[in-house]
Amino acid sequence: MRNNIVHIGADELTYEIRGILKIAKKLEETGLQMTWENIGDPVAKGHTLPKWMKEIIANQMEDDLSFAYCPTKGLDATREFLAEKNNNRNGAQITSEDILFFNGLGDAISTFYHYVRKEARVLGPAPAYSTHSSAEAAHAGSHHLTYNLDPNNNWMPDIDDIYNKVKYNPQVSGILLINPDNPTGAVYSKETMKKIIGIAKEFDLFIVVDEIYMNTTYNQKQHIALAEVIGDTPGVSMKGISKDFPWPGSRCGWIESYNTDKDPIFARFIKSLEDAKMLEVCSTTLPQKVIPEIMSHKNYDLYHQERNKFFEKRSQEIYKTLKDVQGIKVNLSNGAFYFSFAFEQSALNEKQTLPISNEAFKVIEPELNKIEHDYQLDKQFCLYLMAKTGICMVPLSSFNCNIPGLRMTLLEADDKKFTKTCKTLKENIEEYLN
Image 1: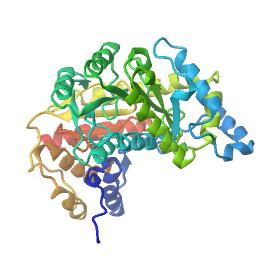
Image 2 (image 1 turned 135 degrees about the vertical axis):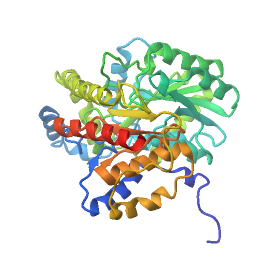
Image 3 (image 1 turned 90 degrees about the vertical axis):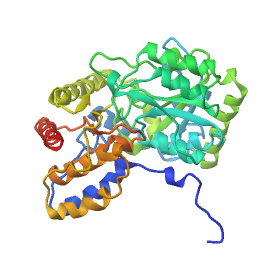
């Protein structure tokens, strides 16, 4: 073309969670029966909205205004409800004006990073959730800056690493946490949260926490909301209903902004997000309208308690199945609905294989040839595992880190199928490493 129209950050837009699907579909065409463990869609795995939620949504559809535009920032009544819900706990207090709705949290994440000044960076965790890492890297036209989550310490953030990355990278302007974490399933303590917020306060940064899984914790772990511990540091909480109700197709998420009055630059940045949403007119109306009635329903808390018992059972089963396997590091997942394990150093090499058909090898061979670094050898195992067993998982190295491993979901509704998947995974890890 006359001019190069490609964005400087185009090469940073990767999403292996769906990317691995293309290879899996080709393997499925060979007659292989697939087990989809790559993406966290509760509905696709058999988790549906309970009847009482569906009735609320159906009743709301009788109101013609459910199909109309809503105010740019979101429905007034819903934002007032969410602000009050936040203010019922000790911590940062907000008003409805501090809440801004988006078409799903993916939209919120994309918009958020797009309007961060190009020279300013947001430091995020590694392993990283791809939507955050890709969006942040694309806005800057450079690889995402990360701090380490430690597989030898239950995937907790390395506080010293965060401090040093902030200190020696003056372009860092904010710190991202995902709590509960995707892909590791870690849940952060109040002490950990306060230490990270302390770093932000010392260096005059903002904090952003993705809390989409805030209602999904188990094994006696409790979610500590950003509002509870942020103090007077500027910050943003990202929330939504995709995983909670669960209604991922609703595309309904929002951000809550804390302490905008404490820093004029931060306040101007938040206003830029509001102005950007104004150009889109508004976000989806119907999902917003049902939020107050669903979240205040007598069955809402009980519903989450029952779901969390289910995820706790899944978490403990996969942990017990893999914890004694030589060559991998295994931690108990305590939040969200993901489980990740890491390979021990030097456990993988390029000569390792699993027995697969010639037809399946032809499908994965082009992807095997793309592997460039030793830490990406987890993808080699992932491909062989998928080509042999049909289990579609995601390599941990694709989550913007140099820790080889795999992530799977805890969503499988069928007990027997989940047990079979766990055992099959264990057997094939042992075969591959030995």
